[in-house]
Image 1 (cartoon, rainbow, N blue to C red):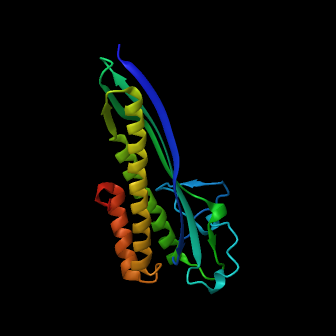
Image 2 (cartoon, one colour):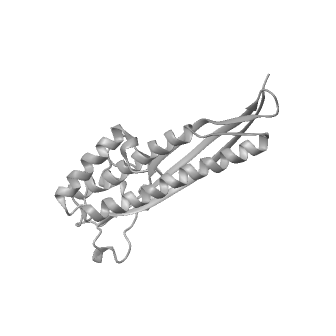
Image 3 (cartoon, one colour):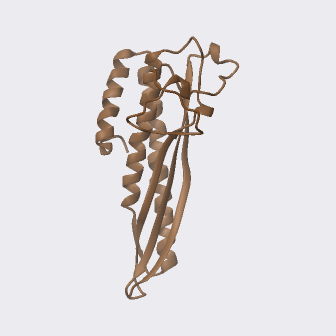
Length: 206
């Protein structure tokens, strides 16, 4: 019977606060967080935080706070005791928005701004899927149990952090090219592109 050692690693890998300029309505919710769900689009009632004092003077009429959490278990086994093989087991990656940290300025938001905000959330979901798939592929090999577990832990963190850092860049690019949703043509382009990436996350920049 092979020797086996297991370990669990978890992280609050990314918290994004995106300021946006376009939106679309839906039903309200008062929970601490709202998981991404294709059948449950965001609504203005989800933006429950009081806007900053200077929000009325900002270009952004709303801001969405999103977080990607990840948690994985990994194990190392050896049939001989001299060569250890390690791999990731159970993987849980979630993408949520926080109503209590997301805000909108009354009178400055509309359905288009909500669409822009929803696309931010959708883009987060694309990278949640990329992170999940990438973590499941992590493996390591070594001559000791602890060495393999340490290598797995390092790889898991490196893989997740690299993709989440890329997400920050792509989110910023989305805001820049759409001018926070003001550029309608680019907004439509990005929404279509994000929709394709949701179907095939591998197509999104890594």
